[in-house]
Image (cartoon, rainbow over all chains, first blue to last red):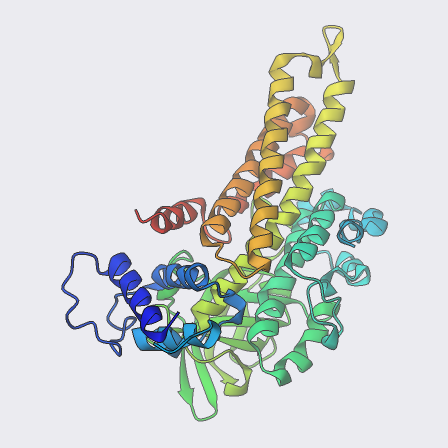
Length: 88
Length: 372
């Protein structure tokens, strides 16, 4: 998957699961999903579960730090670090 | 290898089961039996060889703990052993600095340092994202204030992993700190009397300007929830593997009793009212076994197991209560007498639907993961 594909898939998941029916115009790549309350603790568990399934990443391989899961950009970077990426 | 691990603690069965009834009545932590557990090597099972551990993975460790549950009639002791493995050792191995691992893992896996983790507070434990105990930075220390409640092993523990708030409510507001029991500002209350698991002491902790060096933080600041999630997976799998062993033994004992106890000229097991109860017990035990095995494999492989863990925890804990009730009923008068240990099994089973996330919380989790 390309970086663009990964970012698109993650955005689609976050919007579909946590922002369904809402205006997501302001959802930029650096929007803080945690402080804004878009993703809560169980949401984080669900997101992690989704990433392991969608990108075939083992949970124990992911560096579990807050900064890795705050924004769409940081989540994309985590996935890129663990999934083979080809040029977009 | 895995089957060898099931039998790991069997040679110590007689010592592990000594005076269980009396210790249960007294509600006393069995320090002598803890020394026996140290001898068995069980506490080393899951830890890395570089620190002196046996290096076994999740499923092999589960098998060893199932064996403990099968052999050991002292469920409180087994519960404290599981807490010893998961509370500090597991998170330290995965998230701790090399210095902390080298200093503490050998003490933990030898059993020399009894450990506990402190999450639940007086206001509750289910809402772990809104803990009140706080830690503020003061130079190269954290200063911790507040308290904890219902902490397994707390009255006898030497080493604690504290889950404290360092940020706003939410998944990144928690941080974990490793603290020695003797640290000024940390007070452990006496053991609290309870219905079951009476040899596993539970108590309170209070923090009064408790100063903890930043170097004793486990993981990054704000990573507490992710550490908790990692720990809870293993807490469920390890703790309820012990339960599976206990249920297996209970089933075997109940079948044997139903075969030898006669009423109206026949073994009571020949009556459908009894045999169907035993059939139900068997189905519950094997359902628990399959869920534990399947979920254990998933966790070991690093696969998504969030829903599986919630289901496993609920299924096994509720099966434990029901099979204990069935065993009491089938044993009749013997079932309610303390001398036979059947009623103790029932009392020990009750808390399982509460600790490690209540059945209600687990069902909430399942529903949410189903998108409801």
